[in-house]
Image 1: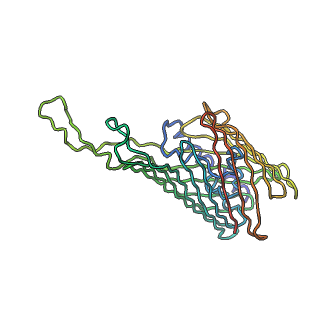
Image 2 (image 1 turned 30 degrees about the vertical axis):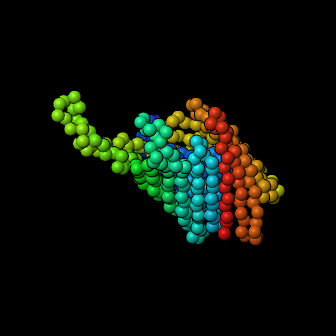
Image 3 (image 1 turned 90 degrees about the vertical axis):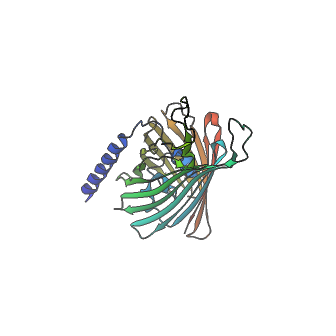
Length: 338
């Protein structure tokens, strides 16, 4: 039985890796908000989380992780993101039984309204515009065995700016494998596999003069601009983590992820976590090692667990991430188990 599972694991990784390579270095990609990492715990560990995925943010990092959770969970995360934008994430996970789990998630990146400015009206036309991105995901996770878990996410991805919209369907897939070595776990995920995105809306319709230099031309002919379409930001992650210390009082975990995007060069994330009595956690990590011209780097944070009852905990997590010249970003997450 173990041999069959191992063959399945190798086949799945090989298939997804080959399909990922086909889109590597595709240049500019759409829906860049899908690349923003979610969950304060994982961010504080430098984004090295694909092989852990042991909280509700597994909905983003590795859908296989939701099958490993021991209780139902609900989470909400808020980030004052760069350029005065707001990133919010909400998710809920329901354990159907010991083997099957379902999850629902919603991610949105929003900004405040801004005045419409043109060459003739640099101070504004009196109109206002806004832009927003969102993703609604449905996740299924399954424990194939005590060691091996797999998960899938289908999500509807959309972007809006003023009168223009773009949307598509995308998929994530992930696996977790607890090795025979005590505390050592492997993980893999492929995110944002889907069709290209193209903006459409009433701003595509313009007046067009086919030959403006010819006498008697018509500059009131309606034309429909054909917008370019762009790939989604496909990302292949593979990682490993190990709980080096695991006692009643102390635990210490290290984690490493290798990341292979289709719109940039490969990079590595590293993180660690120290926990005291499973109540207080201190985390640190470093992001984007070997990534060209990256502004990301050091990350750190802490977590607190408080039990309302013996079986109902609330988890509060905070993360700080350095973005170099773009300054720093702070994240807050809260998770309830029920």
